[in-house]
Each structure stands twice: as C-alpha cells, then as structure tokens.
Image 1 (cartoon, rainbow, N blue to C red):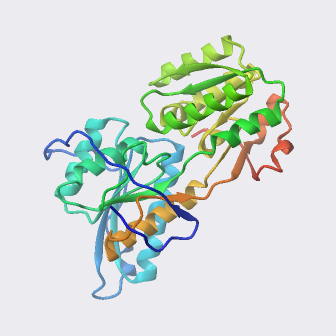
Image 2 (image 1 turned 120 degrees about the vertical axis):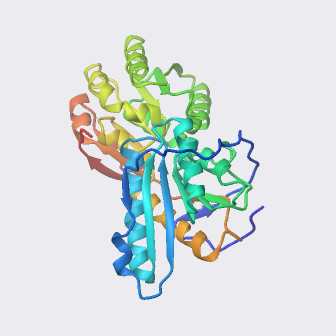
Image 3 (image 1 turned 30 degrees about the vertical axis):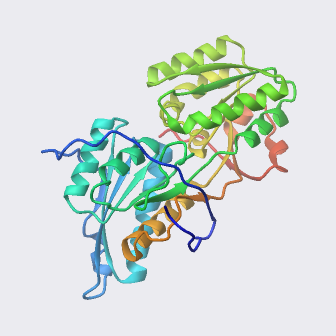
Length: 349
C-alpha cells in the first residue's frame, strides 16, 4: 500500500482497493505503429551527460479528449526535459479500443525497457497495470474517472490522475436550464467503466427528484447513432452522458440530430462540447495531461515509494457550445453562479 506523501498542486489524494485482471499475453513479433513520437527531438535540450528516460504513452483509442491529453503529456515532457537538462524519449500509441492491441503495446513497451507507461483512459490503464505487474515498471495513468471501481488502486507501481465527474452538478445544470424537464435520457456504453458510477449517481439523483429517465446503451458508432435516435423518439427533454469514450467518439455523428430535435446533450468532458454537445462541467484536460507528465517524471526519477494511489484533478469548469446554445434557443447565463463558464464553438475533428 502507498503511504502519505507530498501532494502536487491541484491534486487531492484518495484511497486504495485491489486489482485482479487476466494476465497479459506474451511478447509479440509486431507492434502497432505509434501515432506520434519524439525519440530524439528533445535530445538537444539535455546537458552533456544528462540522464535519458523512455516513455510509452498509450491512448485507449483516438478521439478529441484522449488526443488532447496525449498532446499535453508530451508537451509537458518536452518542457521537463529542457528544465531538468535530461533527455525524455517518448512514443504515443493508440490501442484502437481493442484489448488485444493494448496488450501488444504493453508487452512490447515492457520488452523495450521503458521507464514508465502512461495509459490514457480506463481500459488502457487496466491492461498496462497487468502488463507491468512482473517488471514493476511504473504505470502513471491519466483521466480515470473512478480508479477504485476500476481496480487500479493499492499497487506500489501504479498511480495517476483522476477526472472524477461531479454528476450531481451536471444534473443541477439540466434543471437550472429547464426546471420543467420531466424525462432525461441516459446515453452511455456498457463497456466503459468510466460510465458505471456516474450513471448510477444520475439515476439516484433523478429518482430522488421524481423525474423519469430512459437508458440507451451502445458499443459502436452505429449503435450510438441508433441509441440517440431512440432517445429522440422517446421524447426526452435532455440527455446525459458521462466521460464515456465510446459515445465521445461518435458525438459528431449525433449532435446535429439532437439539435434538430431540440434536445440539449449534457456530457462529462469538454471534448464532447467542442464536437457539438451543449454543456459540461469537468476538468481541463490540458492541465490534467501536464500534471500526469509531472507525476510520470517523479516516478522515473524518485521512484514510486510514497506516491498516492491517485490524484484528483480539480474541476468546476463549465464549458458551453455557444453555437449549439443558439440553435437550441438556450441561455447559458443560468450557469454563471455554478462555476467558471467557458464558451466554445464546434470543431469538426
């Protein structure tokens, strides 16, 4: 178990449970091509004789949130290399939301002797934790909504950052915007551990308020489109989605239909909102990525002794898509007393 330790700025420590996952497969002959790399770019920043560290950044899949986090991690690693006079070599991989691919990436990274694994999102973190079990290579995960529920706590070689969602606040936003809302849609994937706790919290909130809800689940882009269509047909007044990677990857395919139906989509991350959803309240993923990189450097240089099971990144940022708000005829000024409101527009990527 990890013991008390220095806290990083904007982090709060949390508690521990245990991990039990199937073992990773053995080494592979081929590894998916990295989506980005920096094997030598920052070498010129190192002082003569400075240490060299190697990092594997493994995204669960490709979408705006995880891409933003990966970019922030690598940018901060470059800054650290320059500040500390060291060389940090890194490669960024995508697991394509496939556990087999993720296991190949983890196995290969361990075989290559990386100094730290930085998985982004829950499934990637679970797989990397198992792959590193024998070698005890540090695993510093990013953006895990509920590390304890994901069985990622209680291990001396695992730590990272959490973007735990304040579901009740997002529910409050729904009813601040529409006090007469009588039916809420819950759109999520059953394969996403990130969604389990927030969906349970949303149900408890709505039950307590006496408001009905309709669930629609999906595991592929086509299923997300069909699930969103079913919620439209059910006449929901608003839709809530947590930090669900499957739904996020399909947001661009559903947001116009939701707007046309007059249904605001409240979500767990600002990347949804930048892809057309109405609003969210959560963490800044660029900040989260930078803080994850700081933890990774600490793990590489000082070791994992004393590090907490995970560090909660401060949230409270309300992001609103102004184009979607205008199309829906909604006044987002009602959120100003609930947190810092950041207006954005739709980015088609």
